[in-house]
Length: 260
Image 1 (tube, one colour):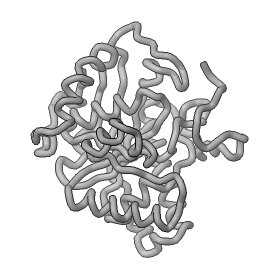
Image 2 (image 1 turned 45 degrees about the horizontal axis):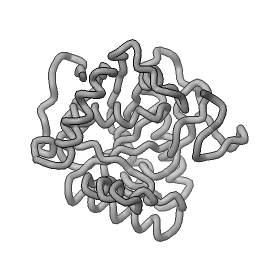
Image 3 (image 1 turned 90 degrees about the vertical axis):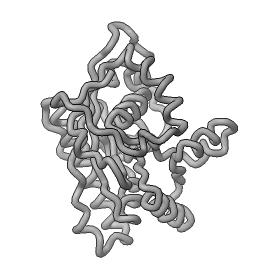
Image 4 (image 1 turned 180 degrees about the vertical axis):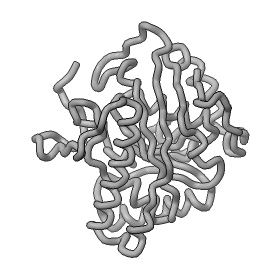
């Protein structure tokens, strides 16, 4: 199902070798997904095999979390995501999220939410876990599917624990499921590419990392890095500025009823 650029398969981490709920999920999901998607991974060596990381990824299809999760698992790490805290209160789903070590995130930027971010950051460091974050917070509103303006969750999480913040871009999921569209199962094994970038240098933000302006600049730098990777995959320059839903009268979250 998954091809790694260069022809070499990365050595699996101890995290992947250790029996866990992920084994069960992978045994079910990976073979099914492989029928419909041929995932090519580029830059796999840039994702740490051990230790914590925060992986910032673009988001343009409801199915791309499966693509990203399969790629991260194939590289050798457990694909944990940041998820809305409300989902953790849903019966069964909440148990599954907690059992797989997913990280709850609060929508509101409050002091309590900030303390929770620090707590989760410390847990990532303590257990050597990685987490996947969609900094946009929802499917991109950009009409051409470029990454839009990001939210600060990934940056705050990474900076709270001095955790490597790694950009990733993925492209091709929209051919399997267009944004807010229906599954397109035929033809089978559509080609999708995942590109992992170098860790983002956050040293310029460390001294003033508690200031909102600093967090804003770090978030912009993160989204620019993701957009640059996507530009490489698409073979065309990314827009100079990220799409801002507020400037176009769009909601920050939820579904846009502009496509079928």
